[in-house]
Length: 506
Ligand SMILES: *Cc1c(COP(=O)(O)O)cnc(C)c1O
Image: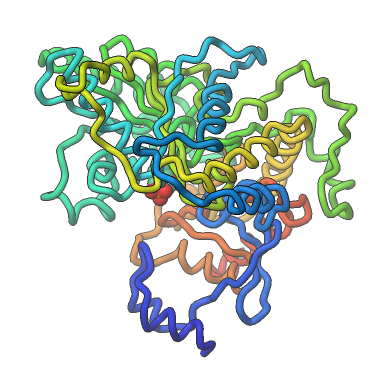
């Protein structure tokens, strides 16, 4: 065993990991990365098919992000945001507010989300939204015990407040005694929806569903019931367009928009957790980039060259909207960001909110209306510098088209997986995909968690040089934006082979 692997096994405890399994085999030790590939200590190369747990945007060791961090490092790595401002964090705050104000017409609306509170990661950014919404509700409505609503299967982080908003029994049940109560409501999970009367087809269940939007009726009923008690929800928390850790549950178009209207109508605020979906992840496949248009050229060229001329800079395209909420023209009261915020280089979180919420915390010092919350590394300069470099890349003229093409390529490749009977549903939202494996696709019969089907398929992928992690029996593909079309082909091909090998079905 490699000495580093030994040291790891001797001293470290890994997240979400059964350490007995970990200790039973030699761990892969990563030493470097370049673009969409990772290299281990033995010189083996892997494709990073889940962007290092959904964080990386532009690939590893990107020269522009590296340069920005190095330039900042030469000035200062960190000074406190307690009592002091700093250069990159102020710029980043401005850029985030502007990006969130973008609309489909390409015009910026007056920013409604105009204040940025920095923290360390997705969990702390969620905690900030939670505490602000709680205190805002107490101050403005006089409620003594504001309550929160979130979706079945929700995951918003691992700190105790964030866990309280979550509804994944496997992760959360053990800590019940530590948590505050929050309510859950049905998630729009078309493939497993009891109201969907359609027989399973070889297509994304959202496309052939037969229902009357009962999922939205459920949200309305829940909001109404709570309001009738004279204690409307302080906020509803949602992951817009797709719930990640819940199992890559992609929501049908229109659900977010209608839900946000209901939330407002019942006097609650909307917290959008875009820790996964933010920063271009939900960029829709470019419609005209059909199977034929790029399949042939992509075979040889290492990077999908983007002809600058075919893009009129005045016409906004889907990829110009960096946040999932914007795709349904929803402006939340809180926008929670992390993972891709620094391009996946450094830990940092941000919570955007409104003037209204900000104002509720203004007062004379002795009124003690201050938001008494903060972290030692709040507004860290290195993270902010990486975030600025990442935004520059994301907002460069050809970048949106490049993501749209990559999403189209992913869509085209994923369609090949329908040949496998174990594939029950393929859900793609931009550059996020979940492939749900089932024992019987005619009846949607799931595998049991203890069969570790997702884990086994991912192990078979790793042996073929492609790294990702499953959520239960759902295989997750979240490629970095620099992934080439050839690498996408390889990723999906390896996934198909791994499913065949693991489940021994052709
Ligand atoms: C990952 C994730 C979080 C938690 O973020 P951390 O940085 O891991 O604390 C919260 N919400 C969503 C939607 C996530 O995917």
